[in-house]
Length: 294
Ligand code: CAA
Ligand code: NAD
Image (cartoon, helix red, strand yellow):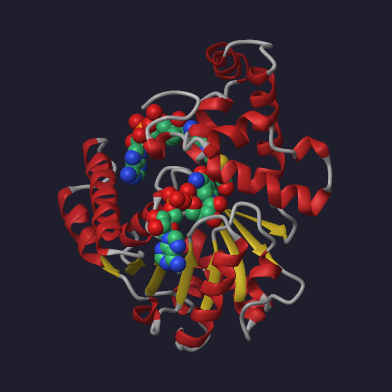
């Protein structure tokens, strides 16, 4: 056994909680369940649990279709996921990954409650936030050293990267354990980032998407041409407006707000069109309409 594997074995995490079973939480739960980890997903209602379960099952079936998972693996992975409407069910979790809406007050309240509930020895509390500084979230708990960022990418079941984010008060061993978990147990590629809004990827990616929205808003080019240009001319798998629809325009707007608070630089400002679309409910794929119709 190699040193890294031995270390991963000794520190293995067997019980994970995921709060929020939407597109990211569902994907993260799928990744954990396929890695053989007992995973509890918390959602706010039975209806949303049904939606989350259906999303996870459909995605795992796609993995079977694509030859990425065999039938036995599919059944085992489904067995590894359970659902709850109360975060009280997360008391024994060794790692909880929060993936609720991109809103500091919602995350703050949630981490305050997780702090009271999660009692496993050395438990890690992680946020999948796109842009909110982890320090602000950790401040809701009495154990900020145990709070880190674990930022997965959309779709989490396909994209290899996890950004592991440490704060000035994160416990080094906690950060190492979170990184080892993502790398050795989930098979992800890990990069580490300090706690600045947007970490590495979003700090680079989001201004590009905002600029594409401004370009479209100004009538510089059609949305189809902007997207086709970046796919065919820059090698991106999807164009920036298609990507905004995938991420969710509500999340894009929330990211812009965190960035403006952190950097006060107009390159991060939300284009008025993005605001109007969110106000009109054109959130992208999740509502069936954004820059495109689905
Ligand atoms: N489990 C495992 N693998 C799966 C899977 C599953 N459930 N579902 C699909 N796959 C695999 C497929 O087998 C396929 O693999 P191969 O290439 O080896 O065949 C691959 O995933 C993609 O296949 P699909 O047919 O599902 O989809 P596609 O080829 O149309 O690609 C896409 C879809 C992956 C979304 C691609 O368009 C893409 O990479 N787009 C860019 C996504 C991106 O930029 N994400 C980051 C957004 S920003 C973010 O996430 C941060 C934030 O905070 C906002
Ligand atoms: P989403 O809207 O698809 O899902 C959020 C889910 O959280 C919803 O199903 C909602 O019912 C649930 N929820 C809200 N409050 C809750 C609570 N108190 N307890 C339990 N569940 C609750 O959003 P998403 O796109 O999955 O984003 C979730 C988080 O992940 C955000 O912080 C976002 O910034 C981040 N993120 C998003 C992407 C992306 O591309 N969408 C990528 C990486 C990170």
